[in-house]
Image (tube, rainbow, N blue to C red; front, side, top):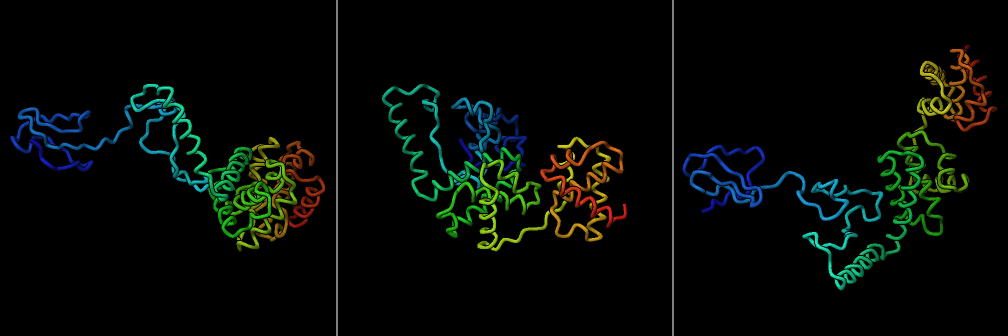
Length: 309
């Protein structure tokens, strides 16, 4: 005998049988039923399994048996919503497939991979996002920056800006625009070095994105570049804090207006080194910041005169 109650909510707990009023209640996890141990009455016949999978069909699943897959992402050409035929030639019970079936599954696997990128747009996105993953790994960028870059590139593709232009240059420009939008301290020179494309070509594509997509980029805050330069140059925490104070004063007096953020942060760090007595030359700071010594000297003179240090 069964009572058609379906699956119970998570918060519902049954201590006694609803028929005889006794117990205890026994849960049969293999059959998905909840029974009374006194009279054998089936209280619930469909129990939801909330834990992880108890079996694994491949080597990859043995470590992670979660019931959910990877989340959808703009940085995947199909947004992570496509299905994939597994690489292992085994059936649902874990047994090896016969030779004739292996050949059929291999053909299905090949055509499944081809069918997902049969459109030119899909092929374009697959190539672009493969390059994006490589650049993000080299530049050590967060998932938020990658998603933003993928969003910008998809919008550029919809507007037809990719036609006749280099995919690598345009995805690099999208990544640089995402870094600027999220205020991630990555310069155009860093992106150019990572993707092995001329800085001039990326800058041209970046200006195209700004013009055609009407993007509004925030002004880069020099204080966000201090930690990066100080870490590369091996400066102390005390020097870094002094540089932040100098930059805040420069911002209050509007000395930082129109200046390159990386050069200004490097000059503030050099001023802090002089004030704190840390032995670092202009060349050391310039190499860590990726600017010239002349830039640091000019910004150093400007900060010194404006702040009367």
